[in-house]
Structure formats: structure tokens, C-alpha cells
Length: 254
Image 1 (cartoon, rainbow, N blue to C red):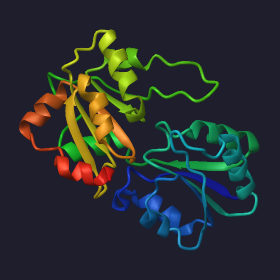
Image 2: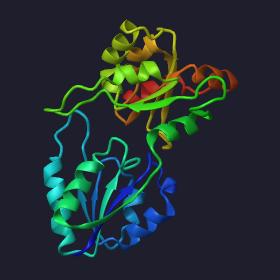
Image 3: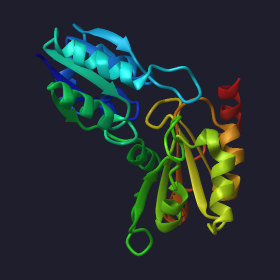
Image 4: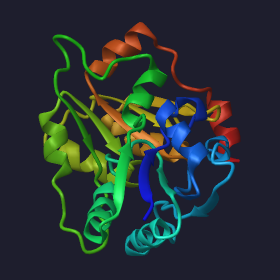
């Protein structure tokens, strides 16, 4: 029986992969990878068979139960099995479902952490998610729920935190903005939308909570992270030029 490694591929840029992750990829016999993993990251697994099992919001994707079974089956015939996930496996990556399946099947596993989108987006802005006297509470949330899951009160967490990072939120921008404003979040709360963080095609758009639907319409199809909170006001004041030019956004949409 082989070993399964749940590996974080990071936010996009191949050189943000950890040394441990790179070493495991070089040893891999088979790699089950997400849709957004960079091709240069995949190229590190030069001797491995590569199988796409990625999920993209609003598109047909591989069933999680099927992925779980493929991992278990692969461990029966391969020494090093890699489940390569964007960002960090333990943040909105459904890693726990895979871990539970592996444990139940008696398959050895290890989680290799990766840089998550929240910290990558903050780095892209040249700011900290926390700041003494302004932001001591940070929350990572997603408003998305899979079919059959109970609703989660993500908005309560955002309202209680100084800084919020909303994953997979661009497609629900109107609902997010309306829900938070209706529940008391000031509509002028500073907000930044970062698309394709760490990659050359990144897009950074800033405004307020009320602007979120408009900003989401201006963004492209890449993975987007929404940052919200007063800490952004200070960060943008220190470094006000963070948006790409309007013409570049237009060209990307075209």
C-alpha cells in the first residue's frame, strides 16, 4: 500500500510552492490535480501520470466520492500518490472528506500545506491582514454551499471580524453586498477584489462594499478573492495605486 500526499499548490505562481511539496511531486507516481494548478508546477512531477479532477464554480466537475475512490485505488498500486490542490488543502479544499475516506480505508496519508489565497492577495496589495489598533480579528469565509449542505451563516462571521477574506465570492457579489449591508455592515467599508493573485494576469480592483457587484462585473474568469475591512483603508492610503488600468481590464474581458 502506497502513501497519499495532500499537497497545497499555492495560489498560482509555481515558485510559491514549498520545498517539501516540490520534493514530493518529483517522487510522485500519480498526481490527481485541480483545474487551476500551474503547468510549471505540474511539470515537477515529471515521472508521474497526471489526472485532472478539478472543480470550477458553475461548471461540471468530478464528484468528490469518485476522487476519494481514485485515491484509495491508486494507493493500492502506486508508492507515491499526490492529490494536488490549489492554495492550502485545509482551507475550502474538501481535504477532510478525502482524509476521512483514506483513514476509513486504512491508507497512510500526509498533508503538505500551501500558501492560501488570502495571504497571497494581501501580499499582492503590500499589506497585512492584521494591524495593531485596527485589525486583530481575521476571518476566512465562503458563502457557497454544495447541493444538499445546510446553509452557513457566513455573514455573521464577517460582521464580527475586523478583516474578512471571502473565497469564491465574485459570482455571488450582488448577494454578498446586499446581505452584509442589510445586516448593518457600512456600505462604505473598504474592499478589494484580487483576481489571479501572484500570476502575471492578476487583476486588482478596489472600492467599497457597495461597489462589489460593479467590481465583480469588471473582473475576468480567474479565481477571485474579496478582502474587506478598515485595515484596507490604511493600506491603500500608504500605497494608493493598486488597480490595473481600465484599458487593461477591458482587454482581458475581450
